[in-house]
Length: 325
Ligand code: 9Z3
Image 1: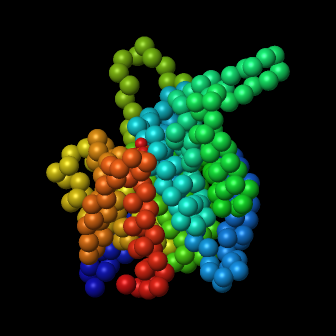
Image 2 (image 1 turned 120 degrees about the vertical axis):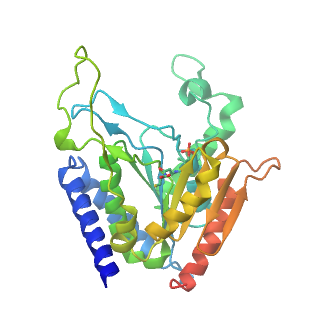
Image 3 (image 1 turned 60 degrees about the vertical axis):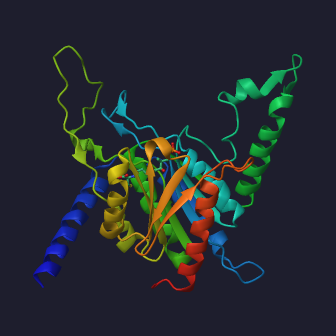
């Protein structure tokens, strides 16, 4: 009884922290537009296909959130995430027949675009005369692939791309998405590959204008971002198949931390990865199994996300069959 009360008190504190985070966050500028797009997307993908199959929907989060230091933001804290994991995974989920809500950091990697050159516009095209531009032969295949596959997925209503920049935008949008996919029950997946800031400056205590230099060291207090994973699991979308990611730089603590996250947040799966080897290997951690997933070295298979998504689709199918297991 005492323990139950203790947990209840902890949950109440967390709920209060989360409420305060959302209440004080700057409101999303285009929230009506986003909810309209989400509603339409989920509605379209809720209709069973001709074969009677219900379409599965995955929300892939991708790239890193920023932490603004000024309300009229000149400086911010950022992180390393390129968004490659999220973009590549989106391609494999689409290939597996899922509809994808791609919640991505503005300017980060995009599905079907990961093989484009670093400066796609300048390196892929050339001007043939004053009025004509053509794709360079060397890049025509990847440009064609990027354009046709993206357009097919978006116009077919299978890919909804929603950009974020700050931690405030990311968490507000994640909550909106979780609420909108609730109705899909176990057919939905939350695949949380975005690198989310652990600390932030609360909007109310943030300087309004550019912080001035010249008066010695900068003294600034960052507070912990409330851990939303638990409420995401319990309250926002309790029946969705939930996959979080754990990143560490020290391989000695990685699996232990992934295990802790699995138990603490009650997600269905934690994908553990180490910064330096994240493109080669990840470990899928579940309550009853730990599976190492490696990038296939054979030519033509380039991403670790290919076998990772394949494994997830299998586990998701089992979950749909029996969500209580
Ligand atoms: C990941 O661990 C992703 O796999 C990466 C992918 C960000 C490493 P890239 O975008 O890299 O392809 O360059 N994402 C989760 C990172 C994170 O913030 N995890 C939190 C933590 O480790 C838990 S939610 O504490």
